[in-house]
Length: 102
Length: 484
Ligand SMILES: Cc1cc2nc3c(=O)[nH]c(=O)nc-3n(C[C@H](O)[C@H](O)[C@H](O)COP(=O)(O)OP(=O)(O)OC[C@H]3O[C@@H](n4cnc5c(N)ncnc54)[C@H](O)[C@@H]3O)c2cc1C
Ligand code: FES
Image (cartoon, rainbow over all chains, first blue to last red; front, side, top):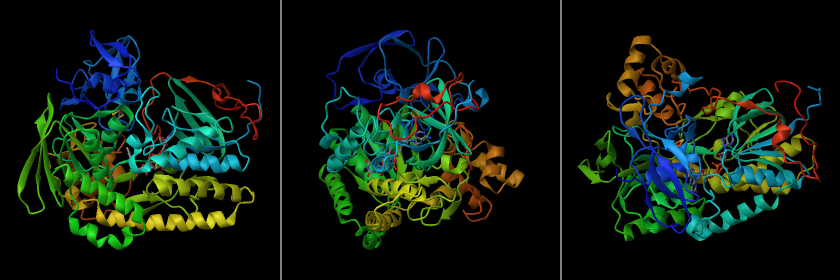
């Protein structure tokens, strides 16, 4: 799948290995999870309302459109999480809407 | 638990320009404030810092504002140890004089003696068909990708909306080597001419603004004024592929792109002020509800002060001035002596910057008539995919002519973003559908949590988070008796 974000600099950083839906992928140290994922794919999640694939919106923790999960099921806000070695991320699982979780 | 005495603290929310200057003034006066900021590092939006292992210079990151950014960061870093600092911590609720803070999967609550809210702003958005496609970002988000991560949001980016940030971020992208497919401004050019007298209140900012526009023209970036956005084209799987719009002369045009950055100036983050029961007034010039403050930043609730963009969208310089001014007001209210000449100078500076901000609001008005006329099929709430038509029929069926009632029936404003990106347009839709004015459409009241919380929270004592420094000047926080 084509990537969405384009790096314009700061590319000489050590690499970090992660797994996206089981596939190995490489990011750079200091990347947010959102940037790391959008270097490999054009999406982060599928809208639970079925309208479209989503790839985040505000990048500042305000919209909550960037939620992904770890393989253990923990919810991560991709724009405000720094990528870490051997993170195992799932982007294919449908999210339930957050008000229903309270 | 042993009933230790609770020592309420002076708490500052936010470590942007407003919060940073507020902390500085408090520390200088011998107070040890507790600073709580959701970001990992201080600087706020405009002076947001890149991760430690990035190497771009302040000039590359902040352009004409590099010296100010460096001064602000140095001031904050230089005071470390003289205030308590909780980064990556969100105040998610406020009740009485107690705030509730979450960090990771932990949460605690703290009593405050005074609270200075410097919570900043987010982009104001106008829905357009297709804005739920991937590749569509808020303008601020597009800037964060560049500033904090050295990335462009796409290979070919259209900037659409209005306001000074539209030109700033487009110019920053072009300068960093990104392909800018075009800048589409809904404000007609003559508005900027009409606003000149007010804009001259800040000649330096005006000069930089003109320079940004010139740099876009020099790079051959198409810039359109007075446009009407028609649609973001694309599909559910691949996302954005083009932007369709009518230019200032009414001709339909299309720009191909794989990303869109959208923003219509800013809206203040007022949830905490709202939870604190501060009074709000409708501001006709920006068509937004703003918390009422006096010229020093006192809210209508005792011991609650508001500064920076979270109180009024007045820009970064005003954020610094108002942050310091709020600190001085707090000190004066505690009976401490303050430098009255300094207060007068800050008030005067703030007055001038307010005039400039009024000029910007005139030059780049919120296109409320476009919001009122949105087609029924347009997605209004992109969180839960509620259309404008669904909102209108809810209003017709239930007679709900007020934002909170309409929200309860239509769910617009109840999704993940809690109305941050749909409330402004939603209010215009309600006002138009009920023939009422925007003022009687009311304002969406904030509800806790101000952002969604992790599912399982572990309660901790505040002192677990406090790094107690040896020469603390103010009482060090003791565990609260209740609620822990
Ligand atoms: C995305 C974005 C980009 C911008 N870029 C520019 C620019 O390049 N140039 C320019 O002139 N202006 C810019 N602005 C306008 C800019 O916001 C202001 O000029 C300036 O940053 C305002 O300073 P502030 O201190 O009021 O708020 P901010 O700088 O926004 O700082 C507010 C801080 O409070 C924190 N906060 C808010 N609520 C809570 C809470 N409940 N709990 C804990 N912490 C909280 C936030 O995380 C943030 O760190 C931008 C605005 C936005 C939204
Ligand atoms: S992109 Fe908006 S919260 Fe992450």
